[in-house]
View 1 (cartoon, helix red, strand yellow):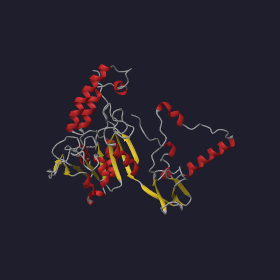
View 2: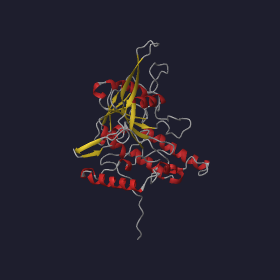
View 3: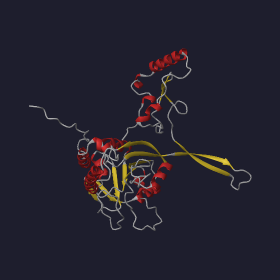
Length: 368
């Protein structure tokens, strides 16, 4: 009797942590071939009729899943991020509070807030002034609250989590003096150091109508976030719809340095102040930063840096980032000295550091 062929299982969620949104989404995605998913918007690969049929099926299942669960789908990699940066406060969690409930069941300390606890599914809900009750959703308490709640002392030290914060307007009156973007309002009230954002970000979206900021948050929010914070982690979600490019990114509030310049005699002001961000750089960018395990054995420590890698290339041009195997006009004597020095450094490295990668060996990133 021939053995039945089983599809390789995806990595399981942690024990006791269910993710029905991921399961339902994955079931649909498996119904579409990898070829069609990869070339969905390529008119030479897929006919208009095929594209329309897939799009309609995705729209039907997608709308149901958004109403029942959430706009974006968490995965096991996200959970490690929340555990590392917890405790968490989520603003605009929706009635389902899917992400908050998911991480709560995995042991993450999370407070979930929404302006209305009575409607909206996975969507950001509109203001309901009559909402005063606490709603328990799958073991996680959902409290009435919005951006202004972030000013409370008990929440100020938590990491702020925003998932699709501006998919819908959160204010009823367009004439309001407050910004229409709920995410931008959060920045007005949040005094903590770390923000975790899930959704499309500048330059990621495939939609021409929603470019360049995408559908998940306003340009107002993204511009201010990039101005006052710096990104220390960005990774794609493992479960995206065909037309969506959602990522999870972690942002740290930037420390600043003030440069004061004396004004000239013709100027009324006495001085001019200019501010720059202080982002701890890589150990090899502006002089080596070392950690001494002993007086005689300094070890290069590049794990402290908060600067994202700058070099990035699509596979079709990745070869342009590679350094030449030999420097031009390098003598054989110089090559022998360089090789000997590399061997000495490797030999003198403490055993505790022997399994750690060299900085140039660290490869960050993964394509869609």
